[in-house]
Amino acid sequence: MIPPPTTKALRGICSFLHYCHSSQTDGVFLSNPAAEQAHKVVASYKPSKFDKKILLWTGRFKTEEEIPPRIPPEMLDRARNKARVKACYIMIGLSIVACFAVIASAKKAAARHESLTSWNMAKKEKWRREAALAAESKPK
Image 1 (spheres, one colour):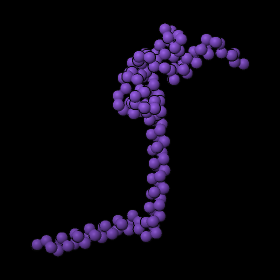
Image 2 (cartoon, helix red, strand yellow):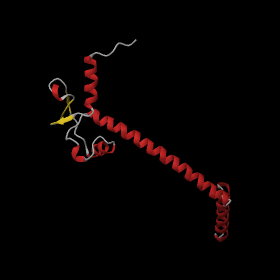
Image 3 (cartoon, rainbow, N blue to C red):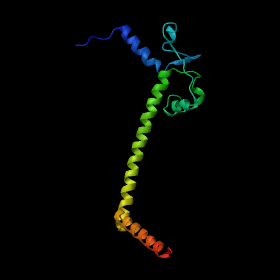
């Protein structure tokens, strides 16, 4: 049987979870405002315009004005990972849509009795005719 967690362990877990939604004070994110001297996380990264777009797209902040001038690198890493996952889901969806579009296009081509083989044979016949005309018009 697993022993119940101690109060100190619970406090550590709660402060870690609170870190994700902590208040911002002059570039320093406090995990627990009451114990501001004990738990400081220095926000040492200045986000670029693209980083701000990622933070907005992933839902970390609602507007660009809410983004502080300096953020912790871990916050940006989490936002980038979330953005990667969203981008992958979008690409999966677009791939599935493209597959259905190709299937529909192939069915229409089959109904018109078009195939790659017939296109290739027609193209080669055209090249043969052009080569024969070029050979006839070439002076000897």
